[in-house]
Amino acid sequence: MRSILKASVALVALTLATPSMAQEKVLGLAAIDLQNSFYVRMKEAGDVAASDYGVKSTWQSAEGSLEKQVGIIENFINQGVSAVLIDPIDKNAVVPAIEKATAAGIPVITMGNKVEAGANYSTLYPDYNNMAMVARAIGTSLGGEGEIALLVGSRGNFVSDTREKGFVETMQKEFPNIKIVGVEPTGWDAAKATNAAQTWLTTYPDLKAVACISDSLCLAADSVATAMGSELIYGGYDGDAEMKDLIDSGKMVMDVMTGAYRVGYWNVAVAARLAKGEDLPKDLYMPTYFVTSDETAAKLKSAGLTVDYINTEKQAVEAKNYTEQLGPKVPASAMTVGK
Image (cartoon, rainbow, N blue to C red; front, top):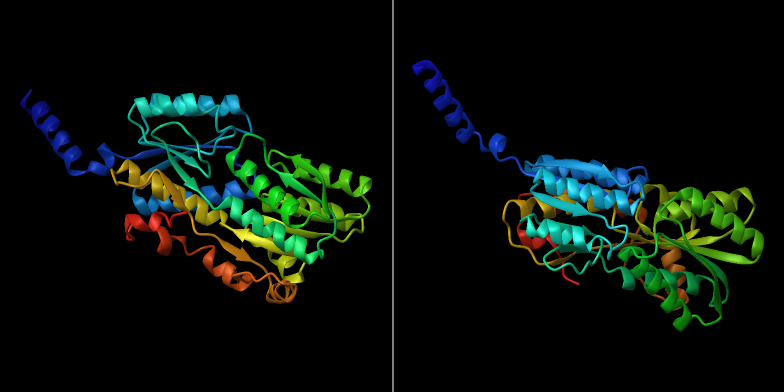
């Protein structure tokens, strides 16, 4: 009996001496999907952030299903995770699940979305203004005339809706002679973007440009245009490395870099800090960059549009220095730059 008691005391002492084992912080992430290259990179860098911050990250894919995403969130709540991160498929439909998590004392971060659910935190980007600049770059490059189209994500998603609004309203207001012949929801699915681009190019042989709220959609459109012998220009958002050739060639006149790696690292860093009790503002904003070639920037400037930009060489550097920018050694103030 005495030996059993000693063993029990030793076990308790070991547990108290190793709080990382006894009090491990677990972050539950409900992603839209984990197949799109952007989300794959988010997870890769997010896992680095989890390691840097000494937490565990559990990623679950909703596979584009709202019902599945809500179920994932509820499972995380039942498991008692330390924080929940959600990339909402529908910013309104996830509110009840967020409120349930909040009632359970679990911090919730809505990634890239402004979701009005009370106590949740929102990690955001200046999406409206960024896509307004993409519209200006395309409109200026076309000399204010022509037919264009826009590939979006899914209706009800805050990021997609805000980027669409910024692009469409700016184009209509500042370039009235440019006609938007189609705005197609794709669910961030490259196959759907491919089909939409093929339909547009067949229906509108004079199509001049395609804008995209995510770079992978522009890549899909370009593959179709190239196969059909059409020359389009593009404007996109994400700052994916695959866009380098399109940017350097001048075909992509403007890209907005959040950077998939940076986004993944940043969100997990925010969640880890909240799980450990740090005080952060409810709305956090990530710094972004406009990316174009030096030649395209010069052409835009000569046409009257001056842009504060980085080229693809600088983009490659900024895309992966997330640990230095957002790691555990930097102050909490580094997590946001304000609106």
